[in-house]
Image 1 (cartoon, rainbow, N blue to C red):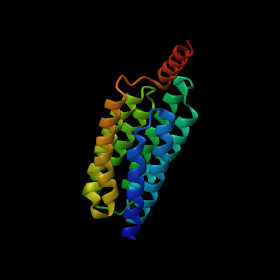
Image 2: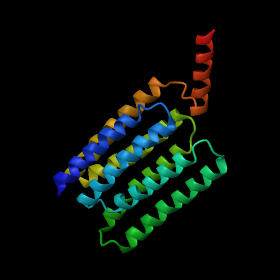
Image 3: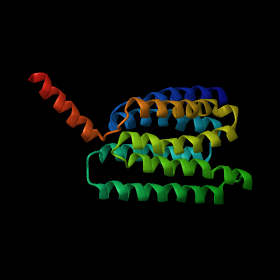
Image 4: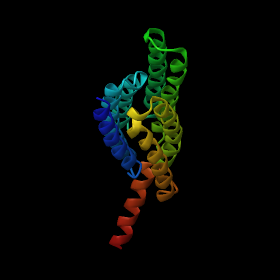
Length: 195
């Protein structure tokens, strides 16, 4: 079963790494959602514990933020607060009810920390700020995946490549305008081409 989990995590890795090269926030979230789905199933196969619960919440988060794209800040921030609370509640429930050693309970805080970084990331309309916050997300998951070991090889490689892809994305799309700013630039380009 570890082999199946490893293959699924490698698929998740490829999709997620590519996501950081998408220019729009919505496009990035669509790719991230697909990658999260593969990671979720891989963690189920590898006994990822808290990672399973967090990835389910990640899927909900991505769908919510795709739905709220372009809407008022109040809805976005309320959703972010509720999601952060869900991450923390899932961690507390997991450490209270899972039969794991104390040291493993401490390791399991890393994905929760990553989830918090990731949720702050998706509240940004500036896609480069989103990428920058995702750096904390990736570093947290990288440390957790290294702790899991070889079964999370796709996750380990994925986070290393994610960090590289985040950096490349920030450099490629320097200026990091919001999706609205990018749309305005595209409209201005069309007008200048028409003249």
